[in-house]
Image 1 (cartoon, rainbow, N blue to C red):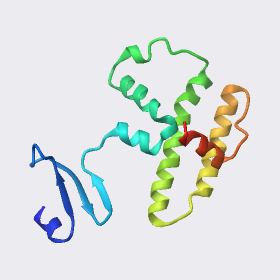
Image 2: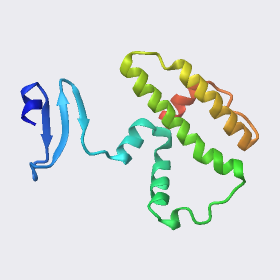
Image 3: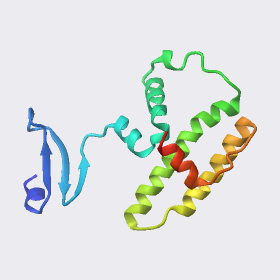
Length: 140
């Protein structure tokens, strides 16, 4: 810790338990040491943030969350795949944004797949482009 602090990093500690580290900062950038998946889902996939709660409950063996879910195969696949594509958008934004590359091409490629999956599962397509989709999703 002393080495980091001597080189300009700030270490955030819990006020009640100073031995517990919360985050590391340098300049205006802060990285949390503890990962809060619920907060991350709301920040990076705002239109799919509630999928996190359902997935979390299912993965932690809470059968009441998934009991009675039914539908044809494509409906189930699209219900799982659509949020994964939103996570892909967030990953592209973060990685390419970090190195200064425009993510538009990757978003359009992902959105083409989103349109195909949703169109096939529902029998109709998503006809608007990625920008309009992202605005709608982020304001959901």
